[in-house]
Length: 117
Image 1 (tube, rainbow, N blue to C red):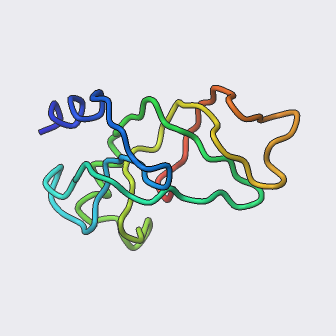
Image 2 (image 1 turned 120 degrees about the vertical axis):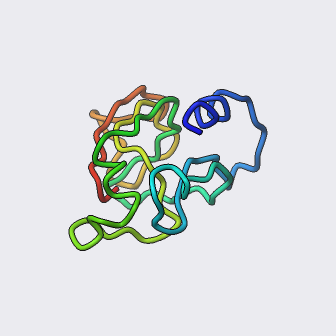
């Protein structure tokens, strides 16, 4: 099933500017059985955040351990929850205080979002 996630992520897709394609879960489940790939609304950045169009992401051991809910008392998710905490991509929108000399529209960035991202 993991290979199908990589295949889907590499396919070009045209969608509304208000939507994004993502790998996400809507409930806890064993291993990858709960993972879906589909459309979700774009999040809006808060004043201190940037929105990144993600070009690559990873699924790490902590992701595997949290997908089934065994760590939900430590890392509770609200659903739908987009999986993958290490990302690379391009800044596409900025909160009022976020785009400055450190970040700008179009910048290529990487981040470790942590488990509760």
